[in-house]
Image 1 (cartoon, one colour):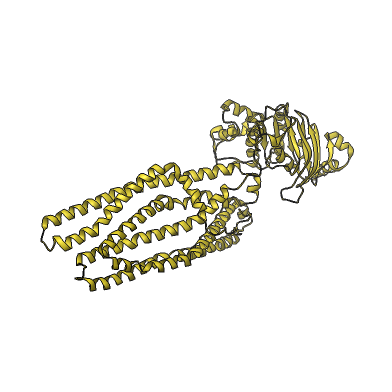
Image 2: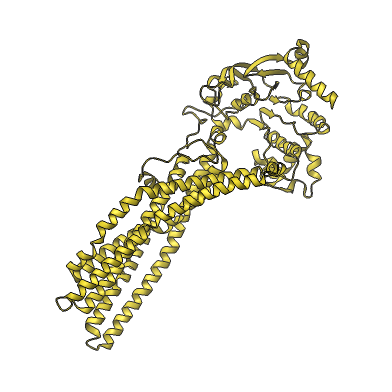
Length: 593
């Protein structure tokens, strides 16, 4: 998948291939018995439907001239039964194939969502989330008609076509061959529009993806938009993206609908030719009833061809979306369990960075030869300028990314030799941007430990000083919050996120700017709760406010991807170097304030 932003089209794929359709067929395999039954029922319906022109021919040539009312009523009765059988079969087919189609769509969507849970941060770092969302929802939905109708219709239409040809050859070989004159013309039309149609639908999928990405980005940033009164500019950009989608849609539909009128025109021309030639042959081996039946079969002959043409259109359209869907499923996680990975046993918390180098992009170095040894239960603070590499260090420890070189060990075990799940289950992480999920506050705190009791949740909230504000809400811990907790203050969201991390009872605790949005009074209360919670745990604390880390066992000063100073708060102050300058500048800022 190409890395892009909302207004950059993704590259078109290689020429049309049935490989994507073969992969789609795998999803239909569990339903092959139901599909076979449906096919057989539709063949019965097709046969019942095809008997109509023959019965009409029989009535015109025999029963009507012979004034055989009984025979005519019998034919009418058989025709009525055939119509009823066709209707019943069609009802079964619609119900069954809708069930199968929707089941397949649900499974594809589940596979996509499950795979997205496994993909590494690098995947999400470089892609607009709207472009990911459009694949899971819109592109999968676009397969609905193909799965619910297309495949079964193709089989029954091919069967109908063969049976119709059999009836037509039985009536008159010469007229049948004339009826097939339009085939070469139709084949030429299909070949001419095939590539253009596929490229048009691929381009449309790009424009749909772009529009979805911009809408998603705009909704997420609506507060900033309104704060900077950028509504008019955003409306202009959206108009451009939307107009581009509309233009692509019109072009794709224009090409798609070239096939249907081509089939209709060829059908009309060949039918007209049959009338002209057929009328001249009446009395010369062709009866009026036979000609009427033949013309009836001609109409039926082109109907399945039109349906097959529509199915071909659906295949071309669906392939453009299937490519994007399977492209995402084929995306490989950059961070994954190695074949030799094993469960990480219960850890004590000794952490070692051994000559660790890392860069987000090939050729760059965010961290350079980091060496660090942390004893179990030790609290390590990381300070430094924005972009110095502090968050990157703890991200590597959590294996959100893998080191470019060197190794990280926990209790002497290389973390890359342990399963990701067993590693992260023993770590508690509170990121700089606290994410609150839609649901109750109780659910949010319990998110990382589903078996926790209500009492344990409340105890965790009390420890981080979240209990007072939660108790003050209308429904306390049962209060429903929206996605991202928009009704809560940033500080309240951080406290809930803190309680979530602590409830998991991690052996290693990572706090990334955990107190950045908490007021001073709450911060002082929080520090008291943290003293007991940090005891016995290896902890990494990233903080810009140096007042929050003065009690850390060690403070590491990070600059340009290297550890340039290390020691306790007092030791670093006494050095009067980089850390001392940071401390002085913050004190001066407070004094000015």
